[in-house]
Image (cartoon, rainbow, N blue to C red; front, top):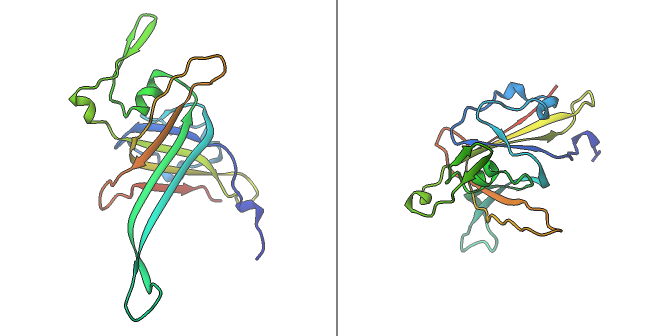
Length: 196
């Protein structure tokens, strides 16, 4: 088997967050300048990350067995789990609120902003979000770089927000988002690769 180095992928991504149901950019706008051309609308760039952005799809297959055969004769897909994780380096109130599934609202004053973290019954009803990841894809046939865009349409963050104040620890938000079913006609995750 011949190795095609153009199919190897390495490089950072830009992560955007928006409320669930936000209009998605057209597939046709995936271009190499995706980093400098944000998706617009309600999509908000979370800024710097530390350690990359990871998207994973974990399929669970349940084996089919019969008494007459010692090994499984087949399997059926019985579960799908989609997760996205990233360590957000920019400790803004907006990023903290996003990590908390937008359970808070941010108040702007003259020279300050504030956010209260609620713990009443309203906090049990978090707002779903959507994620958009602009990363790299295998190179084009011309040898030019190509972009890959992942849209995870309905997520909740399961984040422990930790703010350490000392002289050696850089603060970050260690976020892990789980995807959820959208509808029978809308897939929970959409992937678009730029091609020549």
